[in-house]
Image (cartoon, rainbow, N blue to C red; front, side, top):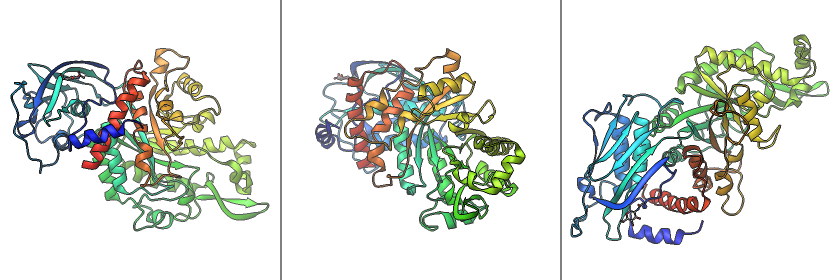
Length: 514
Ligand SMILES: *[C@@H]1O[C@H](CO)[C@@H](O)[C@H](O)[C@H]1NC(C)=O
C-alpha cells in the first residue's frame, strides 16, 4: 500500500507511540475540534468513576488499562520527558471510566452490549458504557485519538463520540488444520482483532489435514491425527489460554468441529468412524465422510461433543456441515441398504439430514446453540429455529445476497462470509472489494434484515501458515471489521483509504514495539 515511506519516517519521530488519529473502524457519531489537551504519561491514569459497577480488581479493565498504557506510552522502561508548558495547553491527567453493569468475570456473548460514549472536553475526559465490553471498545477508540507532536508531547483533541456496532457478530476465522498455527500466532491475531473491534474468533480447529485439538476423552485422535503429537497440538492449557486471552479483549471463541465431511484426520484415531469407500464390490482402502448409519458414530459424537461443550464456554458451537461428498456414501453397500430401509431412495441429502439432525439433537441436549455452514440449509435439513446459518458460497446455489434473503425469509439467523475469503488474494489493493460489500442489500423487510447478525472474514489455511498469516490478514481484514461495525453510510473509499493507510502504519508500529 502507498504511503508507507511516510509512515516509517513518522515512526522514527514517534518511536513507541501509536500513530495519530487513524480511527478504524469509524464511529457511529463523532464530533472533533482543533482544541486539544496535552497528556503527560508520568501523571496520566485510567480511573474508575466512584459509581462505576466495575472497580479496581476488575480483571478485564485492569489489564486493559495496562495494555493501553504500554501501547500508548511504551513499556515500563519508558522515561518521561520534561513537559514543555510554554504554550499553556490545558492538560488531561486521567480518563474516567464509568461502567453501568457488573460483569468483569463474565464471558462476552452474542447479546453483549458494546455501546460506549467518549467525551473529551474542557470539563471531562470520560468514558461511559453499559458493560465492560463497551468500555474495551471505548478504550481502543480513546487510544486511537491520541497523537504526538514532533517534539514528542502527547495530545488528544476535544472530541465527542457515541458509538455502537452495526452488527453484533463480527468474526474472523482461522484454520489451524491445513497448517498448524503456533499459539503465538493465534494470540497475536486476537490482539489485532481487538484493535479492529472484532468480537468473535471462529476457530476452525480440525479438518481433513490434521487434528491438533488434544481431546482428553479421545487422546488417540490427536496422537494419530495431528502433524506431530508433541509439537503440533493444542493442549487443554493452550485452549484455556486462548479463551482467556480472547475474553480479556472482549472476543468470543467459537469452536468449529466440522462433520460429517472434512473429517479424514479423525479416522486413524477412532477406527470405524469414517465410511469405507468401495471400488466395485470391495472396499478400496480409502475413507469418506463420517459413517452416518452406525450407532457407534453417534455414541462417539455424544461423548466427544460433551467434552467440547464444556471446554468451550461460549453458548455457540460451530458444527460445520459443508461440502459433504456423496461419492463414498454412494459406493458403500451397507449405506445403500440403510438408505433403502429408511426410504431415502437415492437422495443422499436425506442421509446427510439424518446425520445432522441426530447430531443437533445431541448438542441441544447439552444446552448449546449452533452455527452451521449454508449447505445444511440448502439441503433442507430441518433445523431448530434458533440455528445460525453461515453463508460462504458466492454464487451457488444462488448469489450470496439472495441466499441471505432465503435464509432470513425462513426465519433463521444468518452470518455472511462469502465475499470475505481473505485467503483469496489478487495483486493490488483488493481490500476495496471486501469493503464495498453491503450485507443487507437484499429484498426483505426490517424484521427480516435484523436476522443477519453479522459476518466473518475467513482465512483458510491451505496456503497460509505462521510465516504469511499476518501480511495476508492485515490490513485486509480491517475492511471487513469496518463494514461490520460502522454505519451503513460509511462507504467513501477515498477517506477509507487514507484512514486505512494510517491504521496499517499504526499496526506496524505496534508490531515492532509489541
Ligand atoms: C486536532 O487538533 C489539531 C491541532 O489543533 C488539528 O491540526 C487536527 O486537525 C485536529 N484533529 C481533528 C481530528 O480534529
